[in-house]
Image (cartoon, rainbow, N blue to C red):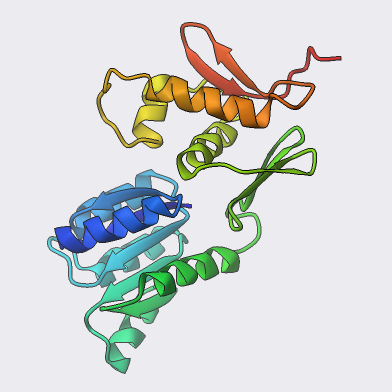
Length: 228
């Protein structure tokens, strides 16, 4: 999943971001309601995690504006305000679920997965496929020609990003920013190492290669139409 956290408490945001990233999700963070509104409207997220009490624009108003603009991305409210009236206000503002702080991280993950499943058909991809390579985004599984492939979390994120951009050249900068969350070049061979490992897992034992290097540009995942 691609998730946006809108949370002004830096410690809470770091905890959420670390846990969700380790669970294999791509996570962005906004520190206030105005930035959260801008990111939610300008990018494509699978789910939003929104604190109610935010600077500049509170969480309820932020979600009300999103809904008023036609944005139907599922929203999970997080709040220390846990009375019945507080939860009702969150749901009536356009929230899809409401979780009271403190919470168990396992419950948060389960609620996010439930929101994704409840999304109307066609609104979100839960499976990606390129030729005979299939990825299940809910079960976090990958198989090719019905053969299961075990991937490490970072390999899964890398493959997911490539499959979401199937048929397109993906540059090293795109991978650094979107898979490793680096906004600078660390001058290491981390991408080459992971591409090599990923290629060994998804291509080595199969007849047609899917992961291609585009010299001087980056990488592309696509069916090899030249293969017999």
